[in-house]
Amino acid sequence: MPKLHSAFIVKRFNRGSGATPTTGYQHISLFLTKFAKFIGINWKMQKFLKQRRGTESSYRPKILYAVIIISVLWTSAISNINAEAVEADPRARARDIGIEIGSLPTGTHNAITDVAGVKVGHVTLNEGDSIRTGVTAVIPSDDIWTARLFGAAYTIHGNGEATGIARINQAGWIESPILLTNTLSVGAVHDGVVRYIVKRYPDNNIVLPIVAECYDGGLNDISGLHVTAEHAIEAIENAANGPVMEGCVGGGTGMRCYGFKAGIGTSSRVLPEAQGGWTIGVLVNSNGGRRHQLRIDGVPVGREITGSPPKPTREGSFIIVIATDAPLTHRQLKQLAIRATHGLARTGTPSTDGSGEFVIAFSTANVFSSRSETGTFHIEMLLNRRLSSLFQAVIEATEEAIVNSMTMATTTTGRNSRTMYAIPLAELQKVMKAYRP
View 1: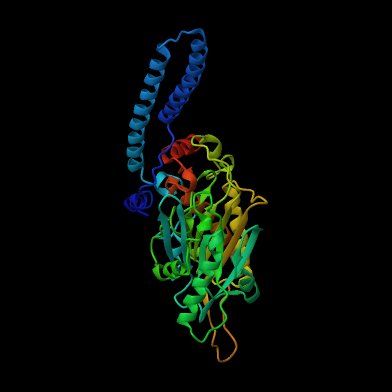
View 2 (view 1 turned 120 degrees about the vertical axis):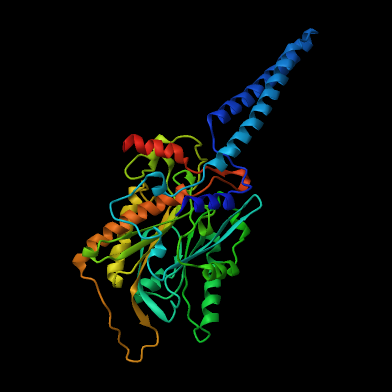
């Protein structure tokens, strides 16, 4: 994605957040404020004791007032400096700042939409001081209900919800758009998908939508139930090919990852022609992991970048969607989905007991008509011994998609004035260069 586009995302989705990165200046400002508070308390005690003796000095109030005035002026000045710093630091994808995961080449957009026919759409709700949520839709094909695709789902750790995955693994195919949203909005989004499909196919009365969730209650007023069925429909109808917006958009608006602001991320890989020339695309909603666990391309980034430590949050989840044009069956796609766990693990998370990680994979190569007159289908299937290169592609794309979900996210302030800071790109570059000179 061009850097100009990255800057546009920052301006659109970080506007009015009121959040700025923590710097050394802010630490000094915090110290001065606390020092002023200390002097104030100490002065009140001294005043009380001196009044009992009938004497009182006036020099302490003067010191107190001076320190308070300096603190206020300092904080105001640094706020302006930091505001300018945010504007001057547009977000960028991993490759834009020199981080290249793996060895396989990417597709044109380095996105899940590099798989022909796949579309992505977002509806972002970023309103007031506490609504930070939305919906993301992945559309496997334009006519997914009557032209079904082989699919598979895999649960890494099931402390979460992904509707429709039992149907995928039973039937072996995908027959619904895939939508991502927050935990308490699964029902509303599910309703939206049902309404969308029933309207397009009025003769159909059995719809089992695929809706996966992550908890965004740290930044978002999740109990306000701000996502509606109409938002789900809008995300589906807005879906498009080409570059995919990442970071604080759609279902990723209120998400965090490894102690930094995160959200939606995507990446792709293209195999050499000698290995089939197939394309593999991955899209993630990143919402898990602790700061000290974070590793990027093997570098212990989370142990090196210690500024702006996040407040403790509950354990989160990762949702991973895989698309490919390789002719894979349900069983082979299940193997592909399992390999996504390797890419996830490379970023550092052990998938804790409190997390919920789900992987949904599909292939656009074979299309099944739901109205087959003969009752049979003729399919093309890749030989199993050709799968290893696809496994590698999924691992690389999954890791890079998670990294992109952080590097493209912007510092966000939400519910209860909680701020989740974006990973500082300049510092990230320094850390990576120190380990990869």
